[in-house]
Length: 278
Image 1 (cartoon, rainbow, N blue to C red):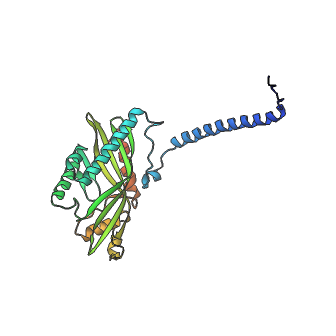
Image 2 (cartoon, rainbow, N blue to C red):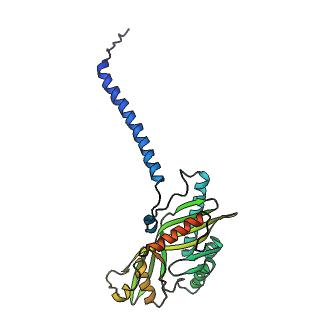
Image 3 (cartoon, rainbow, N blue to C red):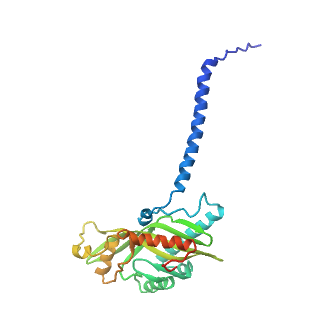
């Protein structure tokens, strides 16, 4: 038989290790509790008027805690109808686009303000003539970030960062204008799903550059200075091509317009009436 050797346990060496392990466990639980406390405090912080007025995505939380499965499904459905409308608009699939809007929906963006029905028809008629739906003879497409969605019963609001790309001629030079915006939606739940009730734009800044980097853009600085900083280059391009420009869009250069837009959406989500139409 083999002899089994036993080594005496040195309890004096084990005690420091036990203390270290016990201290590590206490520290771990302490950090978890502290993290939860910080998260809870962050959720309870009120939204300031300044953060509502800037161009960021900050919004006051509509509900507390993590959304349940039903809320997540609603958020997903809202995201899909938003994405489907934008894709259909760019793909000239106007029947699908029209089906994304509520019959009473409105659209209020840089080049258009009115009913969603007329918005879709304007694009349909322009496409039939082989041109863009705006007054510019341009190519447009959006780079749309995933929207953030807030749901309250059968109503939802959403907001997403968007870069609107326009390619058009300025004189003899083809230019690329990028308008950095945030799109805001109001969406309602019907028996057959979620439909867009409102689409509005909030304008941050824009840029212009030649498509061919070897070419030079000639800009009238005095004319450019007359346009608002939030969307000056798209305004310059539109006017230079004989189109009208609206000077009343919500933009960072006028924070009160941003605050009013977001406040109206929050009121609508809560079921309250506001000055803005649905």
